[in-house]
Image: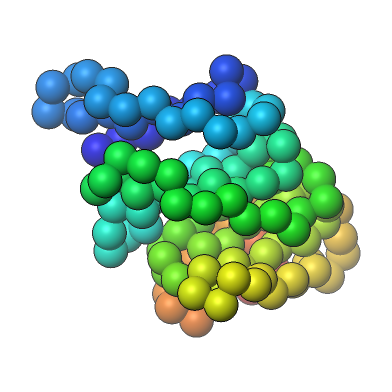
Length: 137
């Protein structure tokens, strides 16, 4: 499967074998800015200008939950670890969402500024980068 999303607030799931849109998820209140599949399952996480993260299941083609915490737009997301997806935001933070505990950890890059990229390196480390020009580990 593949995913596309954008200003229309929709998250579309595509079957690459048939080039067809097999499902459209609705729920974000503003443009969807990022999306990431979990590497171990059919879980999908999306971030939006509405400051929320939505958790979807592509296996069952449905909505699971909405995660709140960011104080500004969400710019980036990675879901290498499905139990702790990470997001970067215009609010100058990276958040690690502990799905099973229904809580999150907040990380602040050294210099501050909008966090525009996040990427897991492995199960224990991730990188973030942003408008300050720095990459944080």
